[in-house]
Amino acid sequence: MHIVVLVKPVPDPASGGERLGADGRLDRASAPAVVNGNCEYALEAALKLAAASEGSEVTLLSMAPASAPETLRKALAMGATRGIHVTDPVLAGTCAVSTARVLAAALKPLTFDLVLAGVDTSDGLGGTVPAAVAAHLGLPLLSYASRIEPDEAAGTVRVRRISATGYDLLEAPMPAVISCTQALGEPRYPSLKGIMAARSKEIATRSLADLGIDPSTVGGAVATTTLIDSRTPPARGATEVVRGSPAEGAARIVEFLAQRRII
Amino acid sequence: MGELWVVGEPGADGGLARLSAEVATLARDLGAQGGRRVAGVVVAAEPEMIATELARYLPTILAIAEPAAVEHAWSAIAAARVAGLLEEHASEPPDVILVGAGSDGRDFAGALSALTGLGVLTSATAVAWTDSGPAVEMSPFGGKLLTTCGFTGGRGIVTVRPSVADAVPGDTTGVVETRQASGPALPPVRVIERTSEAGAAAPIEEAKIIVAGGRGVGGPDGFGLVGELASELDGAVGATRAAVDSGWIGYSQQIGQTGKIVKPDLYLALGISGAIQHKVGMQTAGSIVAVNRDPDAPIAEFADLLVVGDLFEVGAALLEQLRARSG
Image (cartoon, rainbow over all chains, first blue to last red; front, side):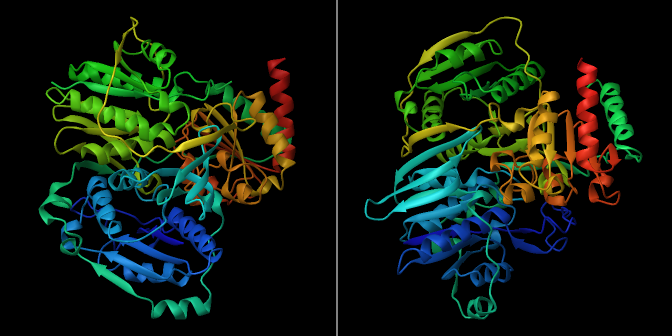
C-alpha cells in the first residue's frame, strides 16, 4: 500500500496564545506549531494500514511555510517513510480554494492507493479541503472515517463513516481520499528510535514552479476570501460558585434554570 | 443582483434536516436585508418531501431528482448537480450559496468549491448583509478569536453552524420547480448500509439542552444518570474525549476540538474539568452549569454556575427535584 497523509502544522490549541498579526494572518510567533490533531489520527491510521501490508510506504504531504520541516519531523518520527513539503512565498495568506488546488497538484504525480487527511484543522475548523482535493483529482471521497478497511485484492476500500446520527458503511475503488476522525484511534508517541530515524528521512521541497502552477493564480494575492474585522470574543460573566449539600446545590441549579426560562 | 441559494440537506428521517431549515431562515433574513431573491435547492433521489418542507421557509425551490442518491453518498452527487445548475445559471449566477456546516454540508461545500472555484467561508456563527455582500462571522482557533470575513469577488459558499438562527417558516409557502441539471460528475461512493445509533435520533448539534459527562462520571454506568437527566430535561447526552476514549459512550456524542461544536441553550457539565480541548466545543452555549468536586477546575473560569460537589449526589438530587417540579 502506498498512502499519502496530508499534514498541516497548526498553532498549538493548548497554548491559548494564537493571534492575528497586523496583516490579518496568523502571527506564527504567537503559538508553537504542532501537527493538527485530526491529521495525527490520519497518520496513525495510515501507519497501522501500512504495517498490515508488506512493502507499504507512508508519505507525508504538507503545504506550509518554510519553517514547517520541524513539525514534519515530529510526524516522520511517528513512522512515516518520507515527507513532501510544498512551500512558496506566494502561498502566504492563501485561501481554501488555492490550498486544495495546490495539494491536488502535488498529489497528481504521486502513485498512491489512499490519501488520508484529517476531517478538519483546529485553527479554522473549515473541513472542506479533503472533499475539494478529492474533487480536483476526480477521486472518490470517503469521509468522517471511524474505520478503514482496504481490500487490496479487490482494489476497493470500505470506510465506516460517522454520520449525523450514526454510521454509514461506504465503499469505493482505490485510489481514494479518506477524511479521518479521532475514532480511528489514539496516535502513537514517537519512540526514541523513531526520533533518531526521522533525522535522516527525506523531506523533499516543492515550489509552485515544481508543481506546474502559475504563481499568479494562487495564494494570498488572489484569495477568494478577505478578513474584514477580528476581535476577542466577549468574556462570559462571572461564575457563581455554590457550596453546600447536594440538595442545596441541586435547588440552586433548578432555580437558575427557571430564572433563565430553560425549564 | 444575484440570488441567495440555500442547499436543503436530507435529514435522518428522510425529510429536511433541521439545520437546513435554520439556514433557510437565516438566508431569508439576509435576502430581506440585501433586497435579494432567495431560492432553495434540493438534490435527492425523491426530492419532493424535502423540497415541500423547504418551501415552508423559502419562496422558490429548485428540486433535482437524482436516483443515484439512494445508494450513494449525498455530498458528491449534490455538489456535481448544483455545479451543473450553476452552469445553467451562468448568465445570472447566485451570489451566495449557503449550506449547513455538518459533515455532509462540509463535504458538499468542499467539492462544490473545487468544481467552481468559488471561495468558502466556513462554520459561520453569524451572517449579516453589507454593501459588498455577506459579512460572515467565524470563530477560529477554537473560539479564541471572532473574525468577520467576506468574499473578495463578492460571491461564494458559506457553511453555517447549527443554532445560528431559529427555524421560522415564511409567511407564504414557496413554489417547487422541478429541474434537471447535467454538468460535471464526481466519482460516486456506494453506501452499503446506514445505521442509526440508539439515542442519537437527532444530531447532538441540534440539541437545545445538553447534559454532558466527563472523566468524573467514572464509567459507562455513570452515564446512566447523565442520560436520565438529559431525558428529564428533554436534552441530549454529550461527553468529553476522555469519556469517549474510555469507551463509556459513542464518539458521535463527543464535544470538543476533535468532536462536535455545539451551541445549546443549556450545557450541564457533570464531572468535566473544562480543558481547552473540550471548552472549544461548547463555550458559546447560552448557559453553562457545572457540577464538579474541584472548585479550581478550569471550568470554574467559564461556567455561569458551578456547584461544588459530587456529581452523583448533586445529579441525583437534581433529578429528584426536576421530577418533583414537573410533577
